[in-house]
Amino acid sequence: MLGLRPRAFRSTLLDASAIAAVGCLVSLAAMQPVVSATEESRGRADAEVIVVMDISRSMLAQTGRAGATRLERAKVLAKELRVALPEFRVGIVSFTDRVLPHLFPSVSANSFTSTIDRAIAIEHPPPDRRARARASALGALPDVARLNFFNRSARRRVVVAFTDGESVAIGFGTFRARFVTERTDLVLMHIWGPRERVYGPDGTPERYRPDPASRVTLEQVATAVDGTVYSEHQIDAARATVRRLLGEGPMTAQGSELSAFELGPFVVAAAFVPLAFLLRRRNL
Image 1 (cartoon, helix red, strand yellow):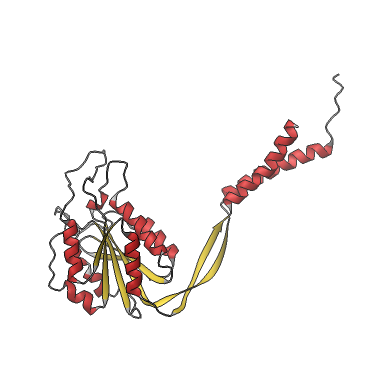
Image 2 (image 1 turned 120 degrees about the vertical axis):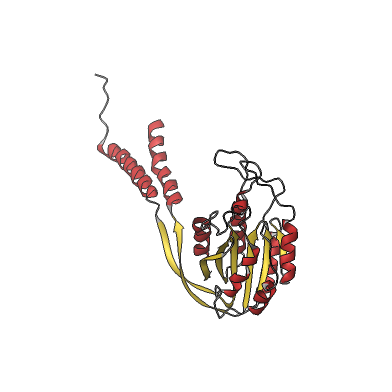
């Protein structure tokens, strides 16, 4: 009655194809496609770094309930340090009143990041001396050098400890001897703030108060082993010191590592092409 002609089969087919293309591309993007490749890793076999993370409860302290905790800030700094040392094998150890290895020195940056994100958490595992007000013991740090966490081929060894420095009393009798005997250097990163509090599950501040003597404690530890102390805002200086301690050396093959490139964002962008085609045909 209106005198309209039916749509041509070709026009209907174009629209149907565009709709199907949008659906297929969005579905493909939801599958999170990646392109992976195995690449040979090269690095230094004569020098290694072990990052030590303080996981005592005081590392939950933060400036306000919305602020980042000390442990969260330490994780960010540890990742920045790892990025600056791509050619070195780097391991991860946690400590409270004892040390526990989570990742032995490896040239794989992916292994380092996943271990930091998934394995490092407050009091996992819990300390032995739970009844005491302070669980962390800086006196346990020499065990990192003593307990064969480093490979025997590593002639230059550096321990970088991220801690708030709020430790039980330290006996320096054998502290220096263990670091010197194992030819290990110590760099301390002070993760601390004077107005930080630890908040309970209900958001109420606990009785915890920051220890203003924590920096002095770390300086005493560093002096005992000819080490250095940096605040969390001096990560650039800390990186420079670690590289200086590691020095120069030959590069050798260190195995292979799987790398992946995510295609999802590009597939989503491609879906806008047939969608724009449909909108143009509808409006014009």
